[in-house]
Image (cartoon, rainbow, N blue to C red; front, side, top):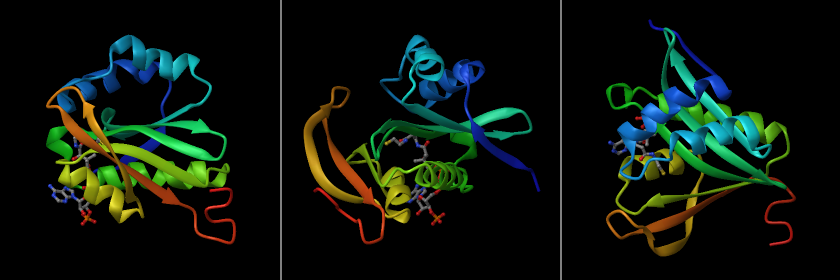
Length: 157
Ligand SMILES: CC(C)(COP(=O)(O)OP(=O)(O)OC[C@H]1O[C@@H](n2cnc3c(N)ncnc32)[C@H](O)[C@@H]1OP(=O)(O)O)[C@@H](O)C(=O)NCCC(=O)NCCS
């Protein structure tokens, strides 16, 4: 079986992440924006999935006090439905949860069934809608949240 590694991303991964962005999104982040995220944004945390030296997926998050705002999750088209997205999300939640993040949020296109299923699998639920959030396609975004279980759940909310 082919071995997959999930590791924290660094500035050297910017080009590979940009290539995945272009393959996966109609409105990709620019190469410069990704470089900046990886080298200059102290609140950004990115992970990549690597198979035989090829980066096949990634996810990013902004760390805001005890909240993780997930910026993007993407897996290269030829590598989907092999639980790579699941492994990326699991690693990200595990690592940042250990570091103190208790609530996670993200926006997802209403029509993005596979991404919604992935997030729901990890305990995210829809809590709101941003009307017309996506310029390409004029589509609404669903706002999903995941709250840590435990006595402090929803504290100060
Ligand atoms: C969303 C995405 C990251 C999922 O990656 P993936 O590696 O294919 O995901 P997984 O194989 O780990 O599947 C995770 C779960 O999603 C669900 N799922 C995946 N593909 C699905 C599909 N086509 N339809 C319905 N559910 C699907 C399943 O519940 C699956 O869990 P299971 O296999 O345990 O049943 C991938 O489809 C992608 O890159 N899409 C384009 C970019 C994107 O839209 N990103 C999200 C932006 S918010």
